[in-house]
Image (cartoon, rainbow, N blue to C red; front, side, top):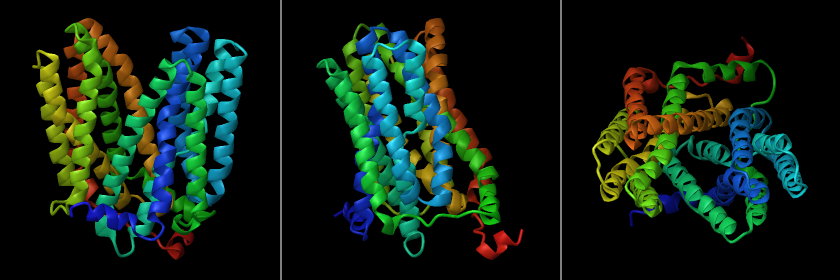
Length: 410
């Protein structure tokens, strides 16, 4: 059966034991930001305060994630993750207490920032474990493993926000925040307990300093730019789709349109991971980003929610393969000693792009209508394709793994 590729991966000794807890935990991570918005709004009645607290969470997560990942690469997941999870649980508890005590808006913003700075980067740690587990003699299976990771992220961002919205609609926003933290911390603790599949820490000294230099390579700069662009695409699409259906008198169509896009992406990501592609990852990247660009250009011509739904089938199908390719290219160009940091930096770039796009697309929509927002999404997709063309040579260049002797001698 086609799914045997995924089954064989999960039957690898120790694989399911880290992937499934990480999947559970990333559902909680996907819930946390939105849960804070609902929690603060439910208590204060102010969208302004809720938005500030949620924004502080997002900014702190984007800034703090690479710093936490640096500690993980240096000292190991099993040593860093438990205290980080304890700090996150404490930060969420403080935020809940602040909300219950009707604290002022600045204190709520500070609480949101503390929760964001301590969010466990379970997706990056899971991806690093796949690289550690398969790199030696099963490197050809890494694209399938990273496709599985992209599907896990998609599931998390399907299930998590929907669960939070349902709890908030039922009048239990605090329960949503507690559930989100429980899933994140519980999944993270189980992941930390799986010592056998954890990458070896890089340790201290000159070796680690030298290996850090691979994060400054041209290939990493290209990958950061690509993730920034796809973040802009995400942020622009979220606002623009909503504005489009509202303009056409069908606000209820937003949920089906997003669902169609997500389901299309899940199917495409599943199928992508089942095949061993003969073309190189950089060439696949150009093909996928080109398809996304074509789809977003078509968005400028749609005239109804139905037409929009048909086009997002194409655009949604390109996203999980692109995310899997980002991971493949990161693993192939970054030194293994700083791989978790690299994955975290790319996630931060995507989050930054999404945050900026949410504001810019709102201005574009106010000035030009929904097509102004779609134009921003199309520009982001085109920028991805252009970066892929310009950076093709850099992305094709294999990394050079330093030996410990080489590193310490410099």
